[in-house]
Length: 268
Image (cartoon, rainbow, N blue to C red; front, side, top):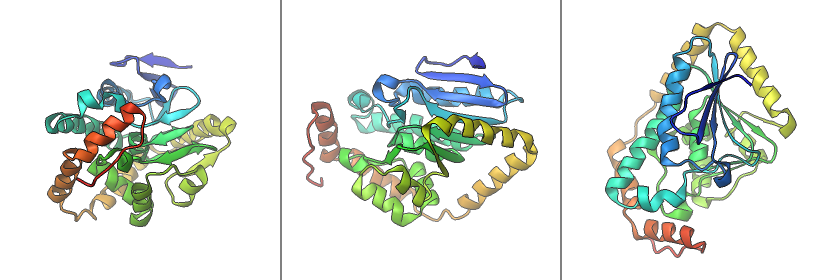
């Protein structure tokens, strides 16, 4: 099973298996929803993987058999995202995690089995490849909660599926099947559940057989090509995000989630 690597929290498991670094979101009782300490652990784990020259690829996955990551831990939002200052602090921490995954030197693969929702989809989008088991579901329920998705993650979604599909994902806030996700290019491959891990091992072995410099440099070149298309008004986008988090609808979305009822939004 490989060797364990020290993790800042037991909700994140870091393990080395040959040339593969495994980062496992380990909160199965909450479908691996990401708590603040889990977000904070992501950069530290990736730093440890990158410091090991034997690791040639990194696989991100969820513990248990029901979920990759079912988003951020919304039950923490009253403590972590209830004021503009707390929202900004939380966004800084989670965005650092997303960006650290995206900037990883080694190829990163999201091994998705089950729910891949909200921030979980953001984690998958920050990876280079997304391989899913049949029956996995995908979605971004931001509109059901009155919050805004991180700017960098929104751009990654648009880069992967295009603006029209990205709008459908945000506007409907519904769950998408693995067939729909594959059709829109949200994921690279779909495998029967029993074959998923074998396929991941095979893909990592192929990466390990190839020239490291070519793999790493092509990753950087492709990412640079995508970045070269940046032309949006970042400040304007951030103002719109802040408007969502400062709205009555966001407060209503949090309250409705905790009270297990349908929110009543008023558009302000």
